Image (cartoon, rainbow, N blue to C red; front, side):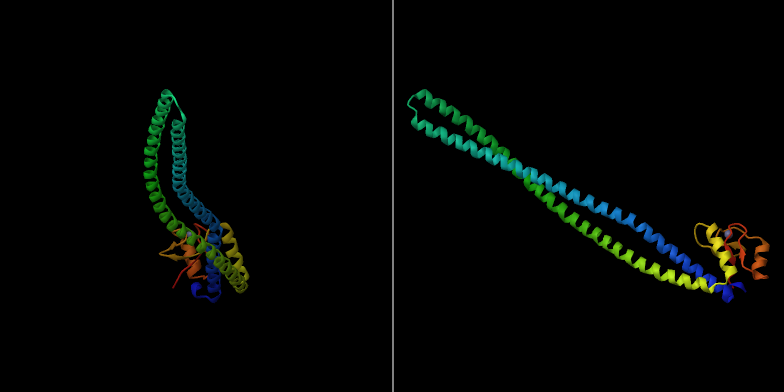
Length: 238
Ligand SMILES: [Zn+2]
């Protein structure tokens, strides 16, 4: 029986090592793309955090400039009051009084404006804090995934090296004619499996029915045989 044949079993072992190597290599090839995606996500999270903080900074700077304006108005009022002590004419005194009243009105307007800005600062600070907390949890998670991915890459490189050594050993153990058929099959099929069992007279690689000739070649002649539909090496498990 082919599937119990020691030589064929060696080919099956080579096949399973080749498949594993292919899977590991695919994962490693794909890894930089996954890494780039993660880094992009981290960047987006950080930018959203910066946006929340920027709004707060803008409001704080608006508050500072209002504060300065209010101080300079107070200074102007104080100057006018001093002048009032020096002027002799009543008209001049009255003119200063009018100016002071105008400045006081302006001051109170700016103070109202400042109160509104201060309330907005409270809201913005709360929003920024919540955003920061949420984002930092998300960023931490993403960073963790990133580190895990980098560690996985190292693990993959090691595993690929090990499996490559095992494949070399396996290839030395498979008989040359069998190995040649196997290599040709591998070349023709772009993806594994390159060897598939026949179940209910169907090739489990392509799921199509194989001819009676194929079955008899495997069962009776016990030869290395290929599926007449997809070209995979087929065998019958018993
Ligand atoms: Zn097939």
